[in-house]
Length: 101
Image (cartoon, rainbow, N blue to C red; front, side):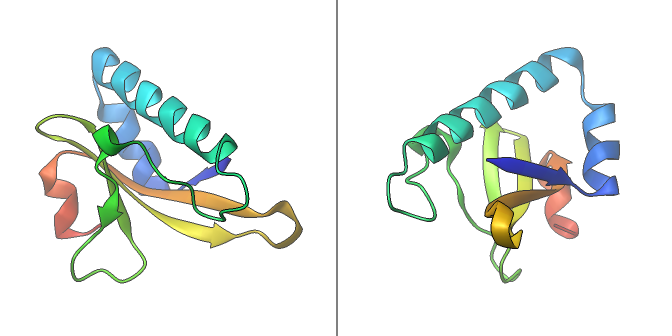
């Protein structure tokens, strides 16, 4: 799966501690595995431990839990045409990211 990051996501990521970055990378690896095993589905069945769900009040934006209780990331799906579906990472951090997902 291809990933694109907003400038805010890049800045959010830069502020994470090394152990938080490791946990986020593991969550993204789980997402990649699910995407690669999706078969004919455009959107895979995501691992339950990532708690991927839509963000209430923010149409088209999804959230993922990369660590409990306060490791979150928001993203949206974008169609890259011939390159297929990609994830645009919007925000990475704690619950504060939901003020502007």
